[in-house]
Amino acid sequence: MSCCLVTWMMLGWTFIPLYLVRVQQFSAAKMGWVMAALGAAGALIGALAGPAISDRIGRKPTIILLCMLGALSPIAALVGSAPYPVVLVLAFIGWAASGAMVLVMATVPAESVVVHRISTTIAIIQAVGELVGGVMAPVVAGKAADLYGLATPLYVEAVCAVGAAILALGLSETAPQVRRRMSDALAKAVA
Image 1 (cartoon, rainbow, N blue to C red):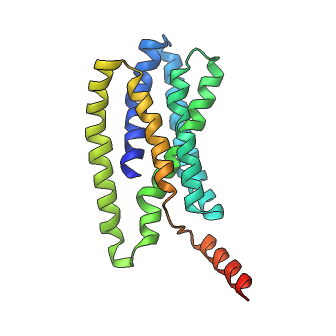
Image 2 (image 1 turned 120 degrees about the horizontal axis):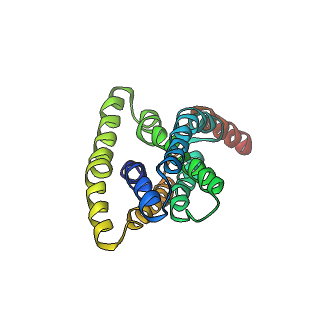
């Protein structure tokens, strides 16, 4: 999931602006506002809402939902012929997947291993995600864009978001409050 999400983010930051300006013929200012929407979503949803929601409904459903929404940001760029406010809203909502990154790369690993393994676990997950998604994927996507067109990295970005959601189906729930509620419900059902 880390590799998918870092790839999703790096391809978005790299290729959405290029696609909007070169293919969709957005002005630099309009493209800048779309990118600002991504940044705002990252701050509001990624840093605040995503983790807070996951405390209430659970890490697994939150990650799945946010990753599925992540496919909207490249779709927003691909359908740049839509009314500009629609592109902005889709881009903002799509960048909600940045909230899953915190959960996938730190929270869930920290809640899944014994205390003395937390830092090593998080470091390995982040290192592999950054090497694959932050170093290798942009290079490969750039070559693919040269060969098949500038839309190709955006399709890959959407697939990475959906791929992370599919991988999240295999997660065990780690949110303490949710696990407690599940245990209580199971105890009542057995009793």
